[in-house]
Image 1 (cartoon, rainbow, N blue to C red):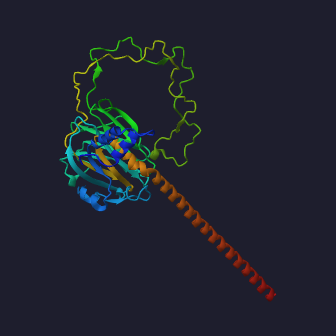
Image 2 (cartoon, helix red, strand yellow):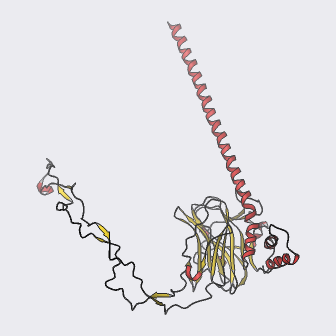
Image 3 (cartoon, one colour):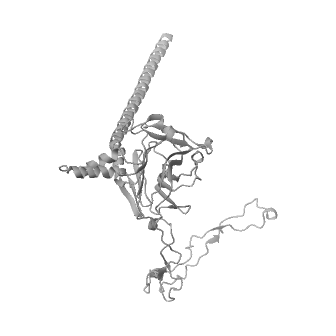
Length: 426
């Protein structure tokens, strides 16, 4: 897709209008044309039913290990049609699928990558990220070993890993973002956006709110550091950087030294002990209750402390600036290459564009319009399920109560019967 159409134009018009009186026709026209000039390289909302199967290619690499995707809006949603996306459907499987679009380069342009993820199953361990590839990817053999340009999105495993990956390839080596970004884990649909600009700055958004930003060169280890320690300069010998020192007035007590183990002289030699078989018997060793460990003098603040020595810096002779870190040639494929222990994640609303405003509008008019109804439906389903469980539980206890009453009455009748028989016998 070469030109922007759809949600971005409407959003641009609404922003141009604002909350107050409407602007003149020139301003409205300018806003609409601004959105129309956005280049949309890829946009996928799965609105044509089974048509997605013609656009997406399943990997055949080690097919026996791969799970299958299905098109669904899930158990709860904001719109039964607009919220349909690709859902992982088999537990403990790898997933590999990709879609190709016309190759382009982001040199001199902003690159925006955006999509929605819904971990409906409350995922315990698995990926929710996407990968961007060059045009030479063999889609039938897509796997974890496939060379990619960008990897972006949430990854969850246990209580430790709940992060958003931002990994950019530079000179055939992946470089992860050094800043930690926590992903969403609540089971609802969330919007993930990565923005890479020609000035080598970046932004990461979750639900159209910025959660991380900075400079690519500073926050990823692409290049050697600009400055290094001067190897010709050494720390002065009299530079004291110890924060605390031993107290010279603290003296070890005379009775401090005690062995850690002592002989248990209260023990007696077993009667069946045979010195010729077991060797000469000796008292066993036990922990000495008087042992206090190795003596350490008390610590006091060092009066001569001068702080950390500031090693003088010099320009790194191995550093060479690269103003094209952000750019890639022949960007042509978007793919999912993940592993999931518990399946059920839904991927939707994929977008690759050069326009930040268009991406924000697209997010607002897809995820933004269905997120609240989705939560409302989930809450309603939860309440209905709790009501069904309550009714079932009440019926269960009611049946148990009736059964006990019935058994009690039968027991009473039996006692009366036995009493009558005894009387007759008497």
